[in-house]
Length: 217
Image (cartoon, rainbow, N blue to C red; front, side, top):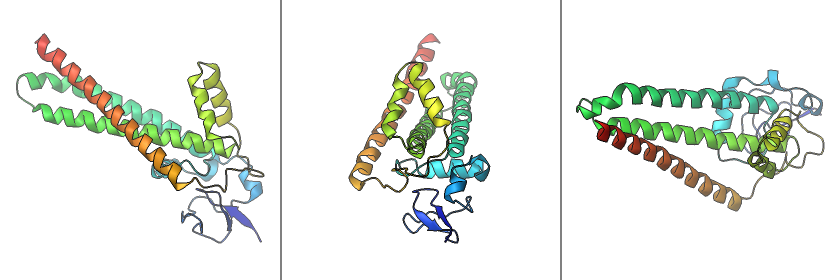
């Protein structure tokens, strides 16, 4: 019998299965996920929209694997989205904050925009961290290797090389392993704290800029 593996948790499935019996994920973009096919380059078997949607849905999931194409598509989306957030914030700051001084726009409006942009940045950062950990799992490495990013230059180069590696199918100990619920809860708590801190920092920067502008005028 021909087999394939779940695109989310890596569970073994029949080629005819449309849904994973283990996690319930719909098998939408991989038609034949046999062992031989998984060892090949998977870039052409996932669209950018599928990759982005999957990564956002699994923002709090560190179990399973992420293919090389999935990781790099989301990395591209991450760069574009964060640039867009910075551009929007800069555009609003340059063109509309002066209107607050003359009471043309209520401060709460621009404050809300900054909060929303900060939360969007946090969600994207969290999803990027999750897909990076799953990409490490896909190469049969522990998610702890993500801490290489704290090593200047050499650590970043090492991660770049790892993220460019092909999927490891045979003998991959992370492909069919699910994380304990207790660990997931702690990870979610840490992610929420991270998001709150990021949003507070973003809000603090906004308030400081507003005070500087008001005092300047």
